[in-house]
Structure formats: C-alpha cells, structure tokens
Image (cartoon, rainbow over all chains, first blue to last red; front, side, top):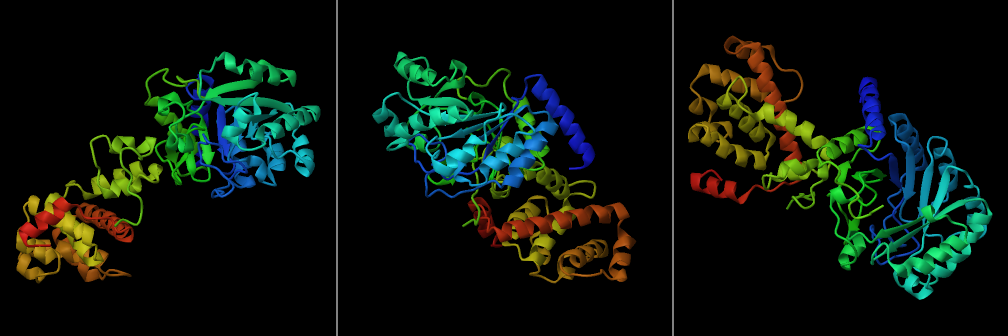
Length: 285
Length: 184
C-alpha cells in the first residue's frame, strides 16, 4: 500500500470504530500450542499442536498499527500464550499503544512464570483466566486434571501481585443458569467484580464441533472483531478454528496481516455486506 | 490431483464467497481463494485480459491457445481448444495454434500470421524481440492492438504457470468434448 492508501484506511477504519460499525478490539493468536487439551477447544490446541506463533515483533507492530488505524483495544489468545517465554515483555511493549486483555488458562503461574506475570500489574492489562465450574471434577472434565486446583491457587496470587484478573466461564448450558451462582460467588470472593466475570457459550467449531458441543455459529453470530494469526487475518476471535487438524478458512479475511490496514479494510468491506445489526446474537464473546 | 486444496462453498473464505455463490467456479478460482485478498485483483486483471476486448475474441484466442501451447500448459490447451472451437475457429486453425499443423496451413492470412508471430516472440522465447517481428506486426496491427494482445499473452502465461505448477485438473466436461472432437 502507498502512504496515501494507508492514510485513507486510517480515516475509514477510525470512523467505522467510532460509529460502532466495527468493534474496537483487535485480537491476536500469539500461538496455537497449549499445555491443556480442553474438550471444547476451538483450535484443537494441545501440547502436540503445531505452534504457529506470531513473533514478538509482529505482535508489537499489530499493536502500534491498531492504534494508528483507530482501534481502541487489543486481545491476546491462543493456544496458551504464557508458553511463549518472551510474552510478558512483548505485552508490556504492546500496552504502550492500547489497553489489552490476555487470555490464558491460569495453570502456569508458579516460580519464575509467576514472577514474570506479576510484571503485568498494569492498569491497562487484564489477565482473563478460564474457569468453568465451582466443582473441580466438573471443571476438570472439560479442561483436564488438576486444572481447577491450579486456577484457584493462581488467581489469588496474581491479584495479590496487583494484576487485574478477569474470569471467563464457557458453558454448554444457559448463560443465566442458577447452576453458575456458586461459581460467581467463588469468583466474587477473590475480589473480581461481576463485570469482569464473563459467561459465554461453547461455540460449535474446532474440537467442539467434532464432539457436537455448543451453539452453531455463522459469521453474523460472531462479533466482527479483527483477529490476527500466523495463518492470516480472520473475522472474529472465533474464526481461526481448527477441525480435524486443518485450519478452517470460512472466516478468513486475508492472508496478509501487516500492514494491518489490509485486513482491516477487508473486514470493513465484509461487515458492510452483512445485514444491519446482525452480530453477537448468541452472546458469543 | 491438485497440489493445493481447492476450496468449495463451505470452505471458501468469507471474502471470497461471492465467487462461489453461482456454483463451482472452477479450479483456478478455488485455488486462488486460499489467498482471498489476491482473488479479486487477479480476476479483475484476468477477466478483461482474456475476454474479447477491443481486438475481438478470435485474436484473443490466438493469443491464449498459442501461448498455452508454447508454454506446454495441458490444462489451458484443453480448455481453450474448446473455447476456440466455440467462438468459430476451424479445427485446422486450432491444430495450427496448438503446433500440430504448420502455421501457414491453418492461417493463409498474412495479417493473422503477423499477429501470431508477435505472440510467438513474446511467449515462446526469452530476451529481446527482433525488430523484424515488430515491424511485420505493426504493418498489419495498431499499437493498441499489440498492447492489448500482449496483455493477453502475459495473463495467459501467468495462468499457464499457475495451473501447471499446482496441477489443477481439467474438468471432465472438457475432456469429453475433446474426445468427441478428436482433439484430446
């Protein structure tokens, strides 16, 4: 793109974000490998998964260009981002541009990793940790052995270190079920405010699709957030899923990820072709 | 067997769906769709470059079929043998463009042979093009004609290497037609 093209893109994307046509958050899949292998994982992540990492330089460039284009927030997910040894330092560079939320499974915060995570005590950084039930056996059925114990040990440590923690609960049941009340109480007992406890449905993509779990979702059901991965840019953080070992391409926008104006413009064009108001219908977030 | 995955309506990226709305768009689109940001620009170039344009469909098929024959692109030779017959080229003209008959036998017209000479110089050789080839072509064709046909040769060479490299499959319809025409 020429400088003029980039300037035009900056104005167009900034307008779209300001007017609510595009969501403000840009997501990054830092990597696809994970120390867990959750039953409903969108990306079939596991310790054996192809890593498909973004580099620290790419992630920082996405952060800088997101701000330049007029986006307002960042999100990092995976795989398990904290398996990347350079992640905390890269996140501290990224937050110089935009506030961010960092999704993780909360099971790696011991020893040196806890010390390094504690560096992320910053008003514009939130660590979003997954926890699906107040009952360890129910939680661990989906997320793996000892997951519950590790999370309930990690969260207070992180909060004590000054790190802002959010909790994300993924459920196959109704989002407002009373069965979630004890979990909400547990989360509240850590001092996590209710607005920082997200409850969302399992989305039937990736491994969840193979097992017939969760809600069916098409593009208009998924928030149209720009999502950057090593494989390209996608419509939404639920876009770059993996099924039977193959990347799903149905929500692919572009293979080009930088300059960010290329996928951002493709997303805006795609959003403009959707029926008005048709997004987030299933409470997916 | 294609070397790359040929996407279909279910796997085509959101930004390429429009090309699949009318049914199977063919293997070139299905392969290009894996990099959706290139699909629109590529088709936006290929479409006008290969269509009748100002110079006309007959001359365009000279360029496409002759270039494909010189490049040894089986897929494009097959596809444009049928297209050439459909737009009115005779079987002998098609065979001459495919290099199966002497050019003079298929094309008694000096003007048409001059154009094919320009196509041959572009698609069948490397390095500078001799002045006499240009002079002969210009004696019969306008500069704009030769610019247009040269764009067609270039677009065809891109497609030749693209489909050959990825071993894209010729459709069964085309193969059946070629058999029926005795030109497989």
